[in-house]
Structure formats: structure tokens, C-alpha cells
Image (spheres, rainbow over the protein chains, first blue to last red):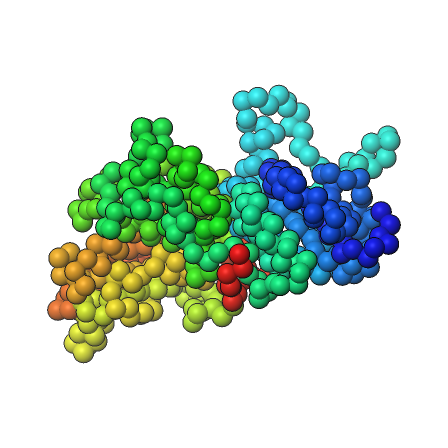
Length: 335
Length: 166
């Protein structure tokens, strides 16, 4: 833990996320050795046994860079975000959840009460006759037990603390991670607030690009399991809802190459404020009908519009969460 | 963030006054609004009109931003089908609105709060009726509350100057 060489200190932390972003760090494979050579990892709970106290003991700004993945959902995550922000020179929102809210952000279609009710009462696998709910504080003979508080709304990292850079993706593509780490180590960073990925749509690097028709028009939308896909033709041209035209590139299109339409994990390009609105707009532009009934029929084929267009970005959207019916006294949405 | 000209509360002393953000196309509906004005027609003052060159210019982001900033309803006015100055802009709007309404419903916003009207340049009376009806409809629906979550400490970072890094 001593740092005689004076190597820059870095930290990794996870908040509301699945762990895939940690995997992405491991996916650096041999390249991770170069990173470990160049830096001193001061904090990485998933891999190394440092505690919060170790972070608190650091001087403010002692961490050259900190990569936080995951959205902000609990009071503990919020505290850690603030702590790490204070200790870090460069704070990077790592992955879709920290960047835009990610999959956990879809919980913003509900509220705390609805979620806790589902998880601790109505889910078919629950056996909880006493109606026990997690408590922030509980007194036991052994002493006081505490748990972080579960918030009503999922937030992105930059809705919680100031963020310097964003590494997009679910998880961020290895190439982008390497480029970002290299840029930080060499001090060749773009303007603060940048997303560390190309600022063009995925279609520009899509291997199926040449088969995209000059004028793309659809009469019907189909879901992947309903189609025997041609492995080379543009997925949109095959009637599949591929969000490539609305999504930032930089991933190398691995999903599209594997016959899976893009679901938009890298988020929008810099000119777009609300990813889902633009993705929706992109689809509306290619539906080949001017007849109202027919339009309604095609649009009805989009199963789960919010889950489709805002799969990774609901907390970062203009509306952020499902509207509450009345003044949010104790939260009272639920569908 | 500036509130874009909308008052902070739509509930006045006299009760609820719906706030409508109206996007009117330059060639038809806006001209109809002009006609209604020069004809001295009286109608509900609840609509804040924004002129756009075509209803097809109305990005779904505009609609969501209006709701997020306190609009109770959004009215989009364009040329009648077949009459678009740019051939197909209004059809594009029609397709967007269909999909956007489904998103709004899932987000807890009644889809009636987004209204699409085809009003030609000569239909000042139709514009009056549309605004009056929509205002009444919103009055019945009541105020929309899409306030930012109390827990959110800061506004989302503005879309900063982003550069290609990789």
C-alpha cells in the first residue's frame, strides 16, 4: 500500500449497478497489467481489501482519478459519491448507470413504496406474514443495526455530484476504457464534461452500413425472436427496431454484429438532451405510412415504449421519473 | 435553469388556469391565429404560442421539456394532411405524436395533454375552438405535476462542450 514510486492513485467504486462494469475492467486482460504498473489502486472494494476509512484518511484530491459505476439509489451510495468526489482530481462516471441512470433507472417508473411493497409483500415468492420491511435503524440485543436509506428516485451520478468525464456503455467497451485511462495518465483530456467516446451515431461504424437503404422505410416492426435474420443486412431494413441511428458509436457494434439490434447503451450524441425522445423521433421518421390507423397499428408494435427508448436513460431524461398524481407527500404513484 | 417564461404556479387565486404551450406552424396554424387576432375573436388566453416553420419541426424533446417545466398541456398545430408546405412534415408529426403519447401515458402523463390539431390559415374560428376546448379539457384534468424529484440535488449537467475523445 505504500506508494514510494509516487504513482498516481486511482479508485474504482460501484453504486446501483450489476457488476458488469467491474467485469469490463477485468476485460482489459493483459492491458490491465500496464494500468497496474502505471497507477496505485487505492480503493476497489470488489477486488481489493480497502475500506471506507482508508479513503477518508486520504487527503482531499489525493486520488488522481476515480471511476464510479452505478446509479445513485441509496444514502450510502450518495455519501460515497460525495466522499470520492472530494478525494478525486478527475471523477469519471463509468458505464450507463452512472452516466444516464441505466437499467436500475427504469425503477423511476415506480416509487419507493411501490418497489418495497412488491419486493417484501406481493411478489409470489415472498413469505412475509409479519410485513417486515428493511429498517434504516434497528435496536437488537447485540446493539444498533443500520442500513442505508432507499431513495424514492434513482439518480445519475452527475445529479448527485459534479462529474468530470463520462465513459458510456453497458458496460463501457474495452477500447474506450483503454483510451480514457491513457488520456488521463498522459494528461491529454478533452474539455471537462465530455463523454469519452466518438460523437457520431453507431451507424457510422456499423458493419451492416453498406446495406442500409438510401431511403429507409418500414411498414412493420418485428422483434428479434420473430425474424430469421439476415446476418449482413441492416437490421432496421429487416424491420427490427435497432436504435443505432440515435445512439453514440464507439463500441464497434458488437450487438449488431451478433444479430442483436442496438438497444442504445452508449446514450445520445452531444447534440441530444433526451435520448428517448430522439430515438422515438428516429423511428417515427422511418415508418412508411401517412394513414393514421396504419400509423397507430405500426406504433402499437413497439412493445414497452419507455423500456425500449429509455432503457438506459430514464433518470437522465427530461421527465426523469413517472409523474406523481398528487403532491408527493409520501410518494404515491404506482400504476 | 430559467423557467422558459412559464409562471411558477398554475394555481392562481381564482383557481386553476391551465398553461398551454402551443407550437403552431408558420404556414397554417400560426396564420390562423393571426387571423383570429385580426378578426378580434376572443378565446382562452391560456396558450403560449411558439411559432415554428413546420409542425414537423416540433422535436419530441420540445414537448417533454414543456411538460418538465410546468406546462399542463401541449398543443401542436399544423397544416391539414396533404397541405403541408414541406409536403410531409405534418405526417411526420402525426407519427411522432402517436408514439410520444404512449410514452407519456407510461410516464404518468395523460395522453390527452398532448393535442394535435390541423388548422389551415383560413380557419381562425377553428383555432379559437381548439384552444377553448383544450383549455376546458385541461381544466377538467387538473394541474400536472412533473416537478423534479426532491432528492435530486442539482440540475442535470448542461450539455457541455463535448469533443470527440477517442
